[in-house]
Amino acid sequence: MERADATSPTPTVNGDEANFRKYLGDGGNESAKDLEKVMSHVEERKAPEDKRVSKDLDDPMNWPLGRRVYHTTVPAFLALCVTFGSSVYSPGISEVAEKFNVSLTVSLLGLSLYVLGLAFGPMIAAPLSETRGRLAVYRMSIPLAAAFTLGAGLSQNMASLAVCRFFAGFFGSPCLAVGAGTIADIWPPVNRALATSVYLLAPFLGPALGPAVGGFAAQNKGWRWTQWPILMVLGACGLYSLGMKETYMKIILQKRMTARNGAPPPRTGPSGLTALKFLLTVTLVRPVYMLFAEPIVCFLSVYIGFNFAVLFGFFDAFPIVFGEVYHFDLGLTGLSFLGIGVGCLLAAVNVLLIDRLVYRKEYEKSLKQGKAGVVAPEHRLYAAMLGSLGPPVGLFWFAWTSRSDVHWISPILASIPFGWGNLMVFDEQGAEVLTGNTVYHQLGIAWATSLLGFISLALMPVPWIFFKFGPRIRQKSHYDTIKV
Image (cartoon, rainbow, N blue to C red):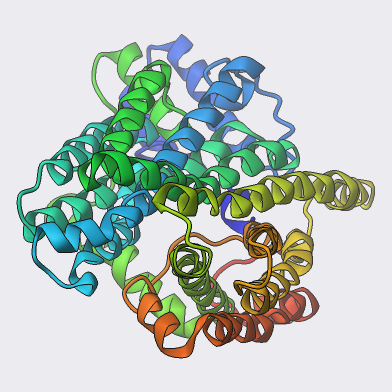
């Protein structure tokens, strides 16, 4: 849950206070007063407990409840659509290989490159949202993702299909990077659990729903119809998002100053090649540096990376188990993924209960102790600690009951604790999409799934270790961390 709980960078306006005073002019007493309110407003937003004196109605945290709920559901809806697009293609892979006369491994490029696009897109979208705002990113990404999805559905060869799928994922992924920032813009940390649970649930339901829809589409209409549902949902997302407003306070303040004075505030940040260098540093160099220099970043990256691989590796088992062992057709095989969806729904409920029963008490305790509502980040690990038990249980259960002499409901039930645990721990993309199918045929269902189970078992202590030694690890950070 850390990703959505981390607040956006403290909103500031391009330029310091002195520049704004000069820009507004000495004679504008009203503007000067407005400046004072804006600058105090910015300072107030730094407070961890988000108890601001400002009643500025332009502040997203002061919006009416209905508007904030709407701005929560838009990124969640988009995240559902984009992750749905990753797995809906899977049931059509065999037909793609046959139609384009390529191997099954090559036809998997339509899946693996889409996931790769999901990984690369946020590298551009995240810094862009800091300079141009969240709304601009949403407005740009939806039509471009739809255009390349259309191209994928109309592709006449494997090369064009692979390229279009990559860019469909690339331009669809910004909602996964910017969505958490949108949630942080409009909900104070203490009230953010429900919104975060809704937002995190969507990317997990997407991959579970994709095969269910794609299976019937590929079976009855052909592989091209695995792309049309994505296009339809993207169109619905685009229409639904038309009512969105900007939520990033920095951009809201800039627009207010421009409207009041007829010109944008003076730029004091880098521009030209300097800006490009800064962008590359922030998006490429700094993350690599942090990966090797910051222990908590390194360990979390390895942990989440392995969870990604286990998730998609497990997905490879379903067509083999339900198609080859239980002889389900494509449509019914797709429906078997819904067990993971049920697990995700249960996890969302558990996350809310943990927040209300555990984290909220820590927050109130912090207020009573005069710590301004600051809670050690380790207290956000309760869900992950509990959820780490789910994947090993589900994987070993699935591995040794996926036999023709055992009823098909058993492996479906086994996928529920797997989905439950994965959402509790929090993950979303994988790098095993090219190799998993081969591994399952070489090792067999039981041992291939058990291999994933052993990996999950080895990773299970990680959240517990972070909870125990988190403060000590944070002390070794080169960056500012929460002091409690």
